Length: 239
Image 1 (cartoon, rainbow, N blue to C red):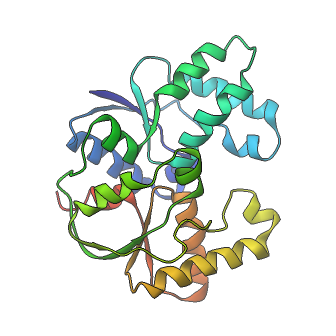
Image 2 (cartoon, rainbow, N blue to C red):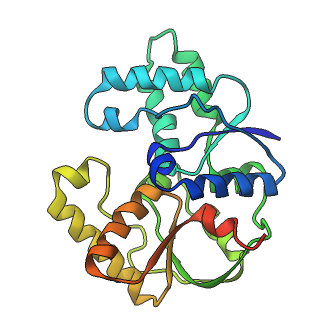
């Protein structure tokens, strides 16, 4: 199966290894991965900040960049959820309404694509360590992803997964929320970290590096040793 790969802006700039590991995992699962190096942003930052006109311009480019019939896979529930749930609003009664709807229907987050589309739960990964998992708001509430990452992690040889308390609680990032309401955002991140550390896990895993980036910032500020890892980093380990 041929798939088109969409990489989020911050992953491209700050965590490129997770992008390369996404390719490794997809190829291990039998996919041919195409990457359009002209791609930019899905349009979410401008949309969430209230700049719908500017966002629409970026989203139009996204629709053009991902023209075709192949599945579009992204290692980000946040970007996936935005495309699925907001492109219809942006392009309502617009010439791009039909192609935008087709793009949103073809868009999948990595874990749900592996489990729901490819029917793969074991990619042959091995990773020694104890970990806990963070449900991102976008994954849980926008993409309805809950069991898929856990099924994939359960099949990783050597990995012990322990659920933390209040696992479905927001980490406090929320994009511009972390800037506008920094005190609340920091408190939410610290609460998430406290619950994760109580599991005695060495690693905190999620489908969204936006959440992990926020949490990692607080971990470094507080001098705490919990390590963050994207799901793709775990699934690409051991082969």
